[in-house]
Each structure stands twice: as C-alpha cells, then as structure tokens.
Image (cartoon, rainbow over all chains, first blue to last red):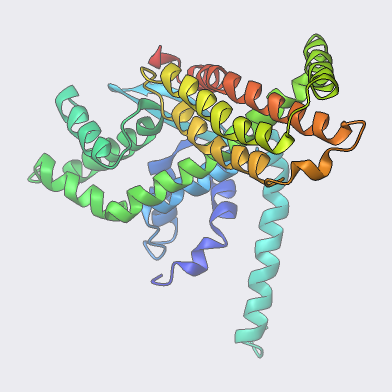
Length: 110
Length: 214
C-alpha cells in the first residue's frame, strides 16, 4: 500500500486487534506482524508506529512493561482493561466503515 | 548484541537529541532488534550496513524527529496533568492550611500596603518567574532524564498564560475589597509553588517507570 494516509486512521484499531490476539508485544514485533499479516502490502514507516503506541498508552488503552533483553530494555505493550473493552467496538466501527466504502466504490457487488 | 554496538546506537540517538535513557530505551531496542534481524536474514551484512537499513526503515532523520515530537507532546501533556494535580492539592488537607495562609497573606498585603498592582505584577512576572526557572534548572542540572527536563521546559506555556493573560491592567481589578487581586496573586503563588514541586514529581514518575536509571 503506497498511500499511508489510508493506514493512519486504522492504525490504532490494528494495534488493538494485534494485542488482543497476541497478548504482549513490543514495537518492532507489531510492525513486523502488520507487514506479515498484510503480505507486505502495508508498509508502515517504523517511526510512525511509536507515537501511535504512546498516544494509546496515554489515553489508557494500553499498558506497558519494561523487561531487560540481551543487554537492553524492551518495552512490551498489552491491552489495558479499557483497551480490552474498546477493541471490539473499534473493530466494529472499522468494519462498518469498510462496508460503507465498499458500497460506494463497488455499488453493484454490495 | 554486544555492548559496543549498543553504545554506537546510543551515540547515534544522542546526535538527534535523544540523549537520556528514558527517551532512548525503546529506540535502542528497536534499532538493535532491526539490525539483528537484517544480519540474520543476510549474514554478509556488516553492522554499519544493517544500521543504515534500520535507519531508512525508521523513516531516516524525519522518523527520529517524528518520534521525538511525539514524546515531547506526551511529556507536555503529562507535565500539565502533574501541575494540575499539584495545584489541586492546595484544596486538600493539610495543604489547605497553606492555601489559607497564602490567601490571607495577600489579603493583608493589599489591605495594608499601598502598592500599584501593575508594578507588583511586573515584579511577579520578571523576578519570580526567573527565580522559579533558575531554581528548577539548577536542581535539574545533573538529572540525566528527559522527562523531568522536558516537563520543566513545557510548563513555560502555562506560566506564560497565567502571567500574561491579565496583561498590565491589574489596576482595573483594584476594587476596595481587593478580592480579584487577592485571587489572582494567590493563584499565581499556587502556580509558582507547584512548578517548584514539579521536578521532584517528574523524577519520581520517571524512576517508577525506569528504575534502572537509579
């Protein structure tokens, strides 16, 4: 996906979904998972992920934990109780949005 | 990854003003993990080549700046929240005693001292703001943490609003009961005292999150 602006609006929902499925993950792992799951179609700029993670942590959707890993510190993110509650509604919202887009761009198929 | 290579990543990040551990930690791990992955995929790749690849994937220098911008924004929000919580304490026991003392102090001051409130205002913005900034900067001189230092910088917007909003027109507030003047100068005092207490709270918060800094 060349146009990253499409990904921007969905990034927080994708992060919530990944964390809901995988439990704890660190930043680089999330980036790789998004790339893998989208068959490299979503080329997220790595630096763009962290502000999103920090924002979600600030708003209480995520919690983080630091753990030492081979001579450095790794920050693991996980869903907070608030994030767990928000995941399904965010996914429903995204699903609804995608269906609406589908209806507009392919009116016959829908 | 060897300590020498971690040190090289640290030096590179310091170049972009990410020189303190609390802002470096996550980035160091990101770059180290990316470099390890690239070298695993292609063992021919040297550390420097893998490092350059990781740098590009991160978005180059713009990526680092974006990351730091985000961190700065977070710290600003956090600092505002901390300052607000410190100011709120003035309404609760035992700080309420200090609140009463400050309000009464200003009340008696305006009742007994014939002073031009605009001159007092100027003293407050020039002298007190410089003193508060000086004290905090001195206390943070040897603190190697990004959050407390940035928090100290970010509160200047609040200070600016509190101090400059009334403008140089306090004389208009000078009604016989001095209620507005007492309220304004008391609020200004609470703000200054809270700002003085902010670095300790910010250091405590950072150490709670990154105990290894201690």
